[in-house]
Image (cartoon, rainbow, N blue to C red; front, side):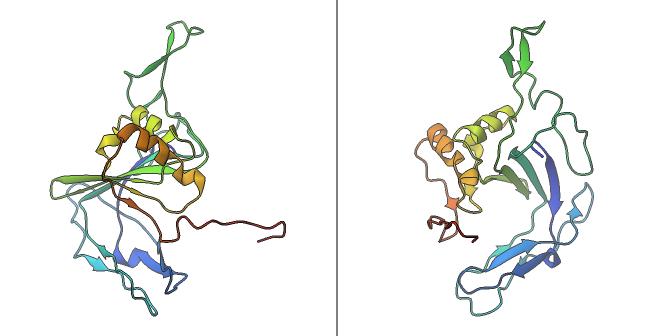
Length: 209
């Protein structure tokens, strides 16, 4: 749901290897979530996930964090009437910041809150905190050039605070927002992480693929 926030810590046992392949090992976060609360003991020592089979690529080392927040920036739906639930924190009615308004001549007050807009596709702002330091990365960028940067603004976040972008795959509804980020941020040496075959052209025949 667009605008949801959650703080979660994943255990090493929650990570499993799926579709093992020497070309592209994939990992899946699974099983139950350990919710990080105040006063709770932090996660244990760092875990190294070892792929199976004949894999000569890089092995990812998982570093523990004190807090992890995931903010939905672009999603298929938005419902500003939903209450908080569990670790999920919903947007207040009308949006994240009451200072952002749009003119609406049909209303008595002449203004309406500039609330985030839903769109097909996905984007999330991931904020990790560890030992007093905070880092932010953007996971996917949505379907339209400006949808992601506009919703970041509506949610009270500056795209300039993003340190890296992670693209899950090459479909346009997860990547087009890169155009808007480039327009807003200009030329920067920001890391963009993607699979080596991210730009591979794919096509489907009239027969079922």
